[in-house]
Length: 573
Ligand code: PEP
Ligand code: MG
Image (cartoon, rainbow, N blue to C red; front, side, top):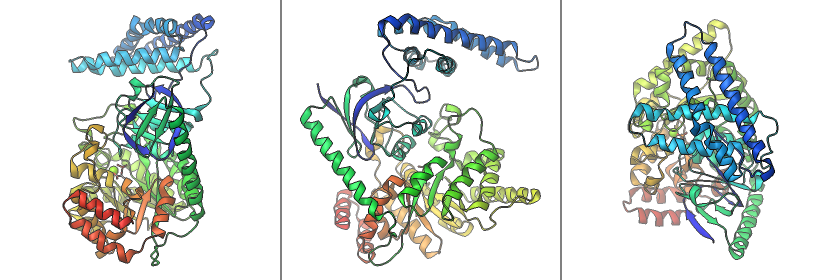
């Protein structure tokens, strides 16, 4: 029977395909049916993998040096105990036999069940042991992956729509190596980093679809309408035909837009607008070049730090930054220093602190970990010798944070000087305006920095006190809230008055309904997902600045959001 679920559209377009249920991309495992004659072979595959991990753990325990802390031995013993417990060693075998599924799927299904039980435990110490269960499962999965006799995973990814309960930004980034047709997650707000990465995959996606993972079955035909945030399960032929038609129209529109790829982004009255692109990983640069962007306005460098057990070395970071700088051939590349914390944690770790979005995140974390920060600063400075790199510092709120960050940059420069390593001595240093306190104390930013970039995703989160990752409050996420608009307009105008460039690099910059409003406030630099760039360019080409300023000012003055919307319609007409 057909039914519809609603969430928030996180990536444009329409995808039609078969649902593929997954638990987590970090533990991304294929799900396939095992033929009745092969069931016992599959059980044996599982047993061999468990055996292999047991041998590995025992070997590790033997090789622990006497000088190592006692916790290490205890930790290995705990993992051996978890591995030998029947809930992990026996239950998956039963699942393979009863569900006729592959070993990986049985193991992850059992893990989800165990993790859910751990989450109910009151004792905090015991509750945290769920992380150990996950680590043991990951070891067994790795062992399964390298085993011969593994049936092949479905290879028709292009026809699959991933349906998951929750995916972290680190999980999401793994999908860059895949070619799925679409994404649906139960949790997540529209500007969560999970949604942002989904958008950068340039495929239709929906976040906050509530119980999709529970209600959709593996292999079921679904339509993902990433524009309107609608998921249609088991559509009938009529609906299917309608969406196929819309899909064709959208594709046609995209092809038409490509004609303006090399057209300069200039308003009707001749003002040049910079349209830059946001990236997460160096490999995204292909898409940036293809979009006709004239620079990278935001390289979220922290994504280099996710999904790994160690921190990337200075050389590894240097290579990544140099690659982007060279690929952009003299166009500006704005590298944002680490914005770890909140929903982006290293090594798949748990979100830290009682309130991660307000905790030790971004520049706060970097100033608390000067070693890690200096490694990154050295890498960025060294790469600046190979292109036009600009450095951008996230989440600044205090004057002393700016001074301390600048002092560490000076120290990194001095270290490179002492080693005779070259770097661009004129590299510009900018700050993100994403905490209301920053927008309200711009003087110090303007005096100490070379440029500003407004991170509207966080600015909205912190101004309206809504967690951007929490879909239960996503209805309160409103870029048109007068307080938000005031802070944005104030920053743009102050920048103009003080002759310091201001960009917007949050999701608002890629929302075509807001382009004219931002232009009307005086914005001349936008940075967005490459996938949105041509649509925004088209809007710029059709806009007349003289008409926009007055209407934008009126929108700024109205208190009623409904009237603001009406005026916005007028602005966009
Ligand atoms: C923002 O906050 O708007 C921004 C661009 O940074 P991020 O989305 O990575 O927090
Ligand atoms: Mg931000």
